Image (cartoon, rainbow, N blue to C red; front, side, top):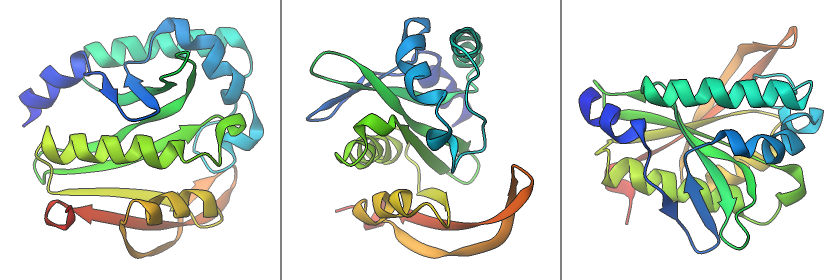
Length: 188
């Protein structure tokens, strides 16, 4: 499976939903990404800090380009089909080839939240994981105070598995993490 993933994610396919296009992140996404990546409200429930300036975002996207080439990055830019604006990212944060398992994650610009974009993008990534990567299990995690992310997982009909108490240290404090999953045979 590793060679298969390598071939796919060197140049990830473009995926379409009714309102979104998911495509490879590019350097020209820097201004759209910085628009949300510099906001503390964006990173409140994430493991990374807000981007300090546009140059940092440019360097990050250059780094991502290298990660694609090395097959170590499995995320797509989430873009509006109408106009092409990049409003976030969605993809696999982890892929475990041996166990045919992936973990998905998503970030949406706060200006576009509340419109179902995270669930729409994540649903397409889940379909890709089961149909194209032949995964058996896809999971997602959320910090317990992040009720919006939990709602996305509920919308995706993922199964709640439990809480890992004080599982992650974020900005000097321990937070509990909830986990959801979906199995291949649960997709109808």
